[in-house]
Length: 222
Image 1 (cartoon, one colour):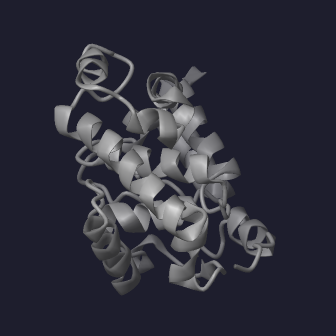
Image 2 (cartoon, one colour):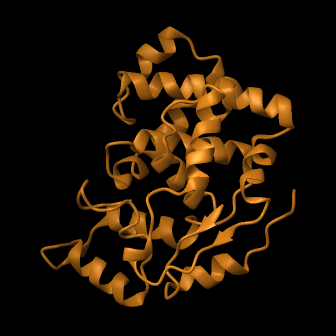
Image 3 (cartoon, one colour):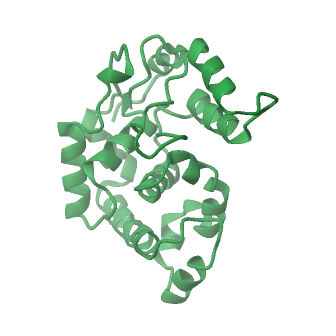
């Protein structure tokens, strides 16, 4: 997830150990005098959310939606619009989003606070309906989702950014199953980013302070 270039790998700035944090803050300082607030937003996301095991269905729907919205864009573009997304999509309540009409979609296309892509907006509504179907079948989306990792996070041991992957056979499987159930904007790269975000995999570098903290978090068994 990159804040500088679309060509940089998505995970390029997510493992910010102290030395990197200093370098990044210097890099995103306006003429060397004031910190870039977007970088602060990004750093806060890394330091408090990314990789933390998430089991709340509404939060899972939010992150799946935001990862899909990010496709073709930088993650910071979506992250800075997060509050607008929450307002536009009923706090990411899938039951409410599933009832959105064509008129609602037209209104969303006029909302400058979100990514105004017709296909992405429509997919969010379709995904909400598919999300509800999984809840009805399994009791919760969380129950269904975390079975892909047997209910426990995978703690990878990445020593450098060169070790990171954009997708894995597991994200391939998740993508395939989501598509089969009617989800859209859930390609394998998006699915792996989602798995990282919700803590199904811990991809903080081993020398990032968050790797140990995230690994220490308990996750409930299914």
